[in-house]
Amino acid sequence: MAVTQEERTARLAEKRQELGEQELRHTVPYGARKMLDELMHWHKIKETSEAVQLLVLNGRADDLPAAAPKVKGPSDIIRHYFRERMRERLAALTADLGETKDRSTIWRLIAHAHSLGAEKSAYLLAIPRHDMTVSENVARKLRQAGFAESLQMNAEDDGDE
Image 1 (cartoon, rainbow, N blue to C red):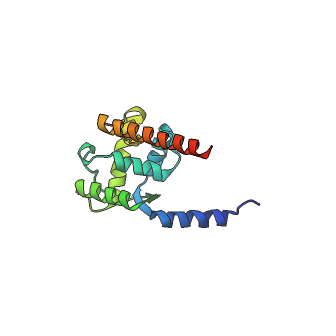
Image 2: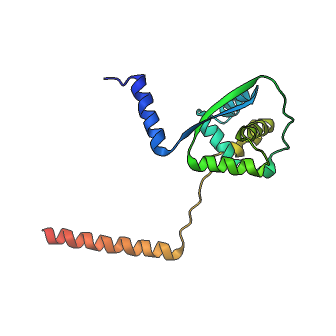
């Protein structure tokens, strides 16, 4: 039997609560949502939360231009979900920029990335990867542990016969 939309929504809400995700809504100048949609299209990102998280992760206060003057007028709302560490990262970036509102940081990140164009904005929407290098000592210990485990398994197999 198919799961209803209400059941799917309830499960998703439960999972978000377990993970400590919180919905954030940022009111940004009109056009910011369209810019974010274009960035997502350029970089083949489907989820708004993922795009905004990548901008926050990869954005640096030193790289962003000065804030544009605030203008009264129509606005857009960007809704997304962040976990606690990501909210802390956003707060730190907001403080580094000298802003008082997270929405200003989100707007500046989107506007800056969009102004760079499809190719040059790629680094802002790239998924950070960790490089792991195993030292010789660790590699040797892993080989020794594997060899010892192999010997033990062989001894157990011989004892079973």
